[in-house]
Length: 262
Image 1 (tube, rainbow, N blue to C red):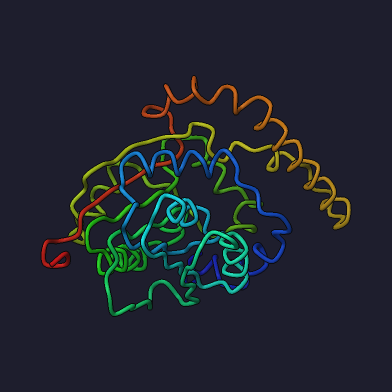
Image 2 (image 1 turned 180 degrees about the vertical axis):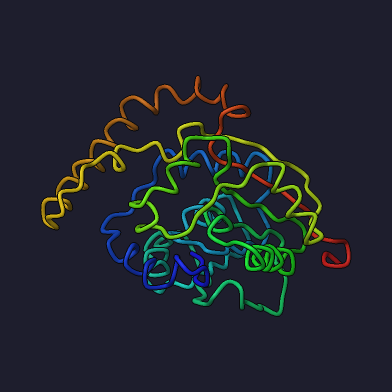
């Protein structure tokens, strides 16, 4: 995850990932992959994932036949989790570095990020997109929260900011402008997953008592998983009809300048 934005430092992400006791592939992971794989070819291609976090999408890409996978994150704890995710899947390269300073000295067929770009703003946001561009030979694929959607209010709540730092959804129109500003040619802008970030976790009360708050949060997470496993999973095919109008996530697929692909 990104490091340089003022409210999303490496310490915050290290703390989050160190608390990840179990690795669960959920509906969100599967829906992101379903949309990515429907519009981007991963088989036989080299992949770079920027701000990889758990590296779930890179694992899916490896299982789909990617020829090489590189995962980058500024958080050592995130990469530790990603290594567990890749256990038994195949070889991958793990790089701990600030995304904005990353210079691989080579290009990859596909440069991917999910849940990363929205944590930057101003010039850092543009630089983040330039790093995507400069390392892509064929395709850039970016997944971000979008708006209008209830998450636009959720990410401004104090508890959310304390947990994840700065985050702002990016509309399709704004994303199109940002891509063009860094000489990336938009190929696809598609909304999906209306239930994004609509979680029971955010409804758990806070008492100010650390042990009780942690216990309530764990109960909310268990409730979340039960609801998504027993109810949301069954409704997902119907909910997909609402993707383009009410999706909480945006998939942006773009091509780098021809001189970058040469």
